Length: 379
Image 1 (tube, rainbow, N blue to C red):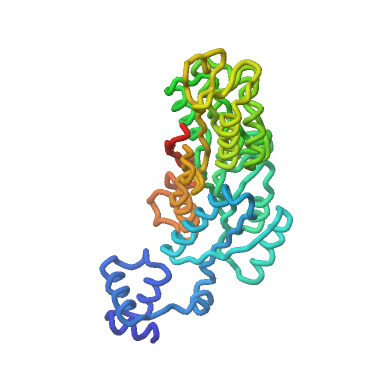
Image 2 (cartoon, one colour):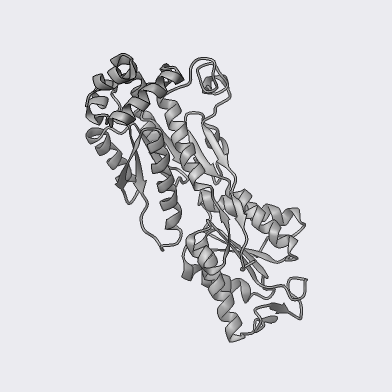
């Protein structure tokens, strides 16, 4: 089966069939539909090798498989990867996976892949302060998009996130923890703690800021209500115990990840079961924290825990959690890349001189998505 057979069945030229396959925006919708019907009827399959020779493009998008961690938060990028694969396939691309343990080995892998497989673009994940990967790709004029804002070297995204030549898609972590904190405030809690990661993590600092600003907006000083620790269940349990055993214990926790939140749940349940006393109160057998007969200023409030990422584990144990729109984020990454490969016609958004052109001062190369709060038994 050849392209000539498709052209004959559709009643068009071979060039028209080629345009439908490689530059569909050049062909009228009615003609495109007729050619695609002929392709389906004949079972025609495009030779990727031949296509690459004609177009100079491999239609491959390279991205890293994240290292396995605790089996909980690793599922977040697994779901993103699933969405990326599906979105790329709909756009006529395939995902090329690679593994790398650190920045240096990842950049070395970029170099190898460009020489061996010639991917059209890269999707970078897990951005961080001083991330050198985008600069390496940009210097070599290799298209990329990051799932995560560029955090620069200062502790927040700052001007780096506005760089029109660094396309990115991210989820507003501060908005997620702010929503979790407002929910707990509305439930009557006032001593709402935060379990996060050590300072310097762009994502972690962003999530902490949403909690801190929301408490401050409610007239509550967040000082002394947070703990920073490594991202793991055991680490979360230990940090939560410290907050629960404080002179004035917290009555609720917002966590930067479901791993930390699961550790916090373990701490709450074990202290409940043991009936251990704190300096000024105790966890009752019913799972309610009492401090001199009151909890955070409101009598009888349960110890609530909210995680972040809405992993399968959160669903299994009844943990409230902030959910990221991962499929939408993946589709956004593919959408930004395909606009680079197949730019809009002149005058349309994103075309030179139009409101999407970085030179025109209105770049549309950044997409900040809003998370949602999923409530379950833990809060």
